[in-house]
Length: 101
Image (cartoon, rainbow, N blue to C red; front, side):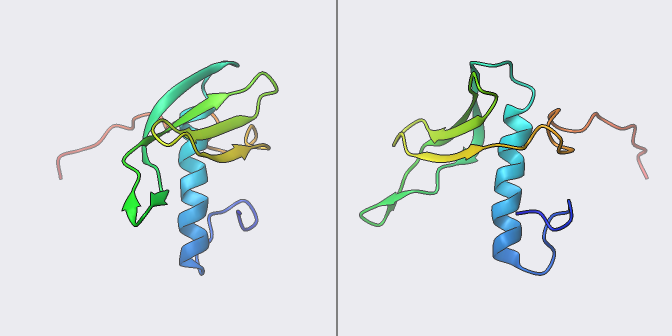
């Protein structure tokens, strides 16, 4: 999904898919094994032309894989491996000081 460790820059569809996975890693990376949390990432499933209104959950399994599923339709979207060495594994970046200008 990544191009030489960077997010894709030429293929917009691939970039959107990679960013979705990265967001799951940011939510799930800091979890302990057998913990989970709700995200603010929408489910992308549709039934009969109606979008699922559920939010995605990320859990860290006992084997350290991240499992991603919808809290409403229960569809499993991804099981993510190899995430531990990414820059997103420790969660969102730390806050940086800003100025008003």
